[in-house]
Image (cartoon, rainbow, N blue to C red):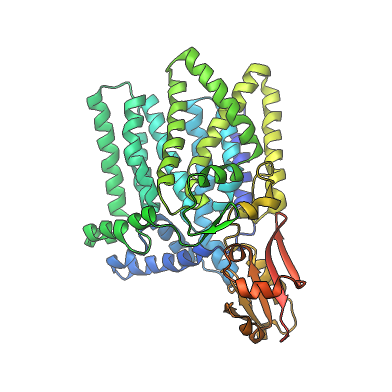
Length: 505
């Protein structure tokens, strides 16, 4: 196919532009922590306080390295500018990974599947939303998938640099977030399943990757230089967010299928979350892929194409099972399966194209149609992509607040901007029940007290959707919900924020 890299460049630039637009908007809860941890991590390095580079058991080291340097180097004037620079490394990593993913998929399958995969991944609404945050899940997703694909390509076309890359990416994945330890168990399966070498040589590959990953993990985290055992123990047993706590303890405050709970949502949570965060194209072509893929497997047996497909399927299923076993659950925890699913969907689209059309000019029209369909889903909600839910399942966005927890702080910035336009806004006091407001508001912000008596002490109250879903503001909300709000902030047709003027004002 001529000019294929030009098409890849267009896909990359499209994905990058969507990720970078209005990057200072919609602060989310956890980002507040990483904006503080990241420059603190760099400060600890500059002052040679190596132990102080342990900031969280997650451990978030890659995010802190990159965003810490970015915040220190650029910072900017005002909070939105600071947030933009803090988020920029996530944007860059996830955008550049699209090009590498295309390159690897092209070798493993073919150019058309690679182009379709790159397009679906670049425009995947769930991945796109998290690719704009100073957080861990999108970077984890990119590193895990690239580790998997680079190893698969090595086993097809052995080159030492690919094996080194797989090891480095494994180390970077674990340095980003602990769920990546899944790959330590999964990599032996990949090697033994895909390798045509002897078992002895296959085991040498596994040991080599593990050694490179361990070196990467050690070298890039200064806490490991001075107290390696203590650091590893804290990663597992830290009582706030160590691995043991994450597996055994729910979040403590959750909402699922219309009911408030302690965050232990049960076995249906991730299947429902997957359906809600996926796109109509995925729900159409994933079953088609499975039907045609099983037929191809029966016909062609275990050729390399089918082995690669099985490997991706195993990655999706086994990683999902790992996350289901943990009692602490959020939809973003299964983000790493989404680009892998996109690759399978790309294969499904290709199977249909090859069987019924199989003409190159038509393929580019098909690719353009997929891009336009995705843009029709995500452009109307730009840049608040976290508000996306699948329009064809469970009643679409309008019913999403009855299904699962909505809102992570995004939208509170719009409420703050609305109140910033008020006369003498600097002297206005606002009570809020969720995070992500104060950083944008020029007046005074205080937490909303549970007592109705407290309400008269402020000028405005901002109620937030995920707080209301969990009854965090039950008494004040009971008092105000029958009154007319001065302003309602809507994202994707969902009421995210209610702004009420109090009797004081």
